[in-house]
Structures are given as structure tokens and as C-alpha cells.
Image (cartoon, rainbow, N blue to C red; front, side, top):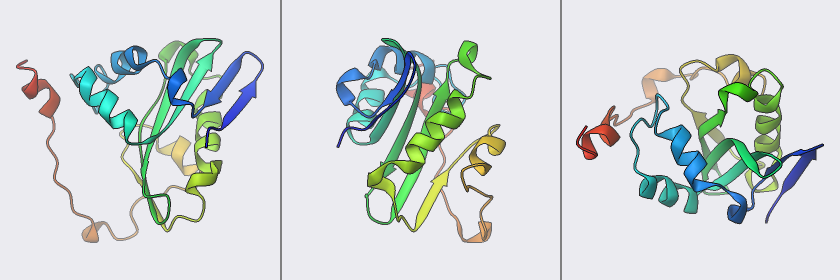
Length: 150
């Protein structure tokens, strides 16, 4: 189901045909969490996720991706608003749109990782892990740079 929200010239859509893969890749490859990621990996991740594109007219200025089973669990990732567009409430609107999407209602658990946007996510119900000792991970920082030979 394609969902769309509009505010004047700005729109958030889940229509995969509207996503600008090159713009998303350009941002993610310089982000702290996906530095150096290959375009092909970005494309594959988008094809297998529920994605939200934030647009100013036809120009993509933000993005969010939800990995979910649509029944019990969701992992929110790759959330961004271009630097020159920050401070105008786009991040909050993007999060409101993600969290209200019909395909992710009633989930038992949401997770995300952030280095610097705790305040934004707290406004939408996220909090630090209640039992951090029960969480486990396999972390491979710098994996994309290593794969590209940098």
C-alpha cells in the first residue's frame, strides 16, 4: 500500500518508484553508519524494506527505512534529512509519518540505533533499552569501506 503525506510543495511517500536511489546512496555513503556503502547494497536494502522518501517538489531531501515483518517487529534505520533542510520540522514530520503507517501498527517491538538524535526519537516513544544486558549484536564497523578497498 502506497501512502503519501503532503505539506505544500513537500511530500513524504512510500512509493518506491519515486525514490531517488542516487540521492539516497550519496547521503548514506558519507553517513557515519553506512560510510562507503556500495550503491548495489543500498538498492537491495530498499527493495526489501518499507521506505519513506521526503521530497521538496521532485528533489529528494530525506529518507527513512523500516525493516519489518509487518506483524511483531520493526527496525528503523537510514533516517536522514539533508543538512540544509534541517531545523524546519522535517525530521519530526518524517517520524510521525513512519510511525503512523498502517503496515507498522500494533508491533510488539521497535529498535533503532542513533549516535545523535535521541531527542527526536524520544518524541515518538523510543527510549534506551530497558534491559541492555539482554541485547546482543554482531557489529562490523567500517565493513563497507573494507569491501570497497579503501
